[in-house]
Image (cartoon, rainbow, N blue to C red):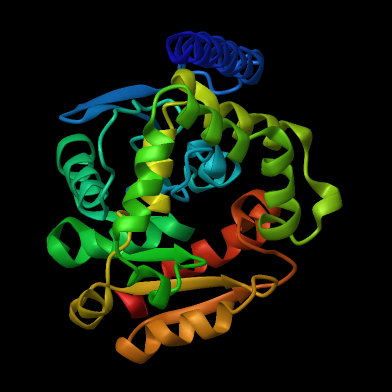
Length: 321
């Protein structure tokens, strides 16, 4: 009797697994059907942990654009900004490892991994001192890269930097269990796909990313949805590392040491923006800051013209060199 129950349970479990596997496959086919994240106009940097997609355009002093650290994000985030910056700069726009059109290996994504990526890309692809422009959760490893190899970089501009208190959170047993569950085959992919289903991405834009949420173009939602599910949802490995705090690091010591010019741009519609930026300035009084009205977390997508004015002001300001 017990043997029959075990056999039935195993058969049932197998059928459930097959069903979830097929659902995951359908989600990936649907989300990538429009092929919005094309690679024809870009190049790949063959890095030791995977191929990194990037574009290069314009002439002048080099600027490296670094999008927000999220499996759904990509260099698409900077599409409007890079077009205009390229009129006076050589603009490099990359997809971070685990994002966009870059590879998504099954590894632990640490803060130092992205520090290495930024420094290696600057040395091997750009080949000269570079201005960095980073957004959101990419602020910590961008500033750490500048602290570790200051001679490689000129100015560092950060839009809506991470909360310093949140960056101090570290992995623990509970977080490591969550990481294991997300990375687990089939069922972990299901958890990830649920987290990044189209409805959730749209709600994130409404709640956090855009100030005027009635103005969100459907193409943006579609691009983020596709970005989250490329390579059969292998963005789950980056997601598991982010949720488990492996991409966090305490940057207070670095902030105190950095001699390069740092410029922080906050969105007035972003909760606690002024408090967060003030906390950075409290550790380095030479940091300059400004704010953009009627925008939230992603002004580069919502109000690119306002952000561009702030970026040009910083890039052209010789007093903060």
